[in-house]
Image 1: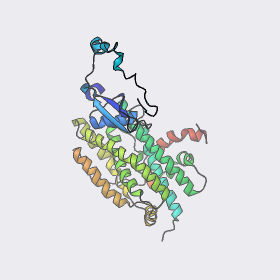
Image 2: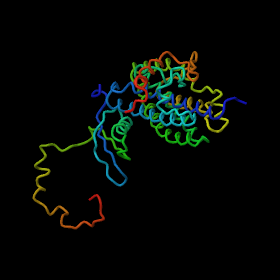
Image 3: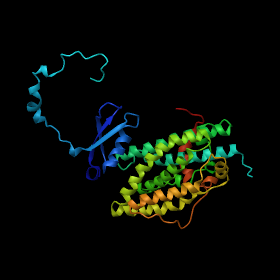
Image 4: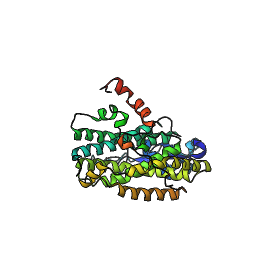
Length: 95
Length: 255
């Protein structure tokens, strides 16, 4: 029944103001409102968040394992693309 | 003038609210592990836990008002059927999911409007409890209103099951708006809620959701009543036997 009537939704929760939403799991639900409620019931009942996004899983376009070489390996030998040559001031958090 | 002191009235008033929360919460907990699917199983049990949390606050306060040293466990586990004062609707068995939905929806709408009014109580403790409780009530209402619409305006079978559930539950509705001496003393003292006000809002909310759900709210052919006098349906005794068993076997047992 779950597969036939209840599509999968991916759940993103923001743990506190100013932070970004993080993927934390998925729920089955018949529609957007129900998905939001189940995300609330399943993932935030112990005060884990103050904002929730849900998106139907079929709407997510994902890279494939076959894309590995073309997508990610060209970056491996280009360390100058990392901002590691700067000193981050001590007061800056969440970098 | 009534013979009832304000303290006695406040005790009974608070106890009734606690009994409603406990009995409905226990009934709802019967879905634990039996929900239609995992997510709703968790959703239903969240609501049951909200109701249990609510009854604990109310029992503790009732015990305090009574002043005879009874705590929340004494009031929940060491009273018999005739001493319970919950509305009959709360003790009705869970039935199918349509019946649970209607039972819960009727109670949610009542709770939402009742506790919204109770926020203005002159009794500071009851007002504080109400302000906390009304937030959960809004969520419960939202969650179950969606289910009423989904099942009412769903398939032929779900629509039929909702109609059957409504027909079954309707006779327990009017009891929730009866005003007796305890209510009157509390309303006169600015502590309690006028249930006529709650009734008006209850009807408006239910009719609004039912319109979206393609359902009709029937006038009951007859009304069942008596829960607040301890005159219950045959269902409550079985519920209490199961719920109270451990505390009756091992009085004072703690986790």
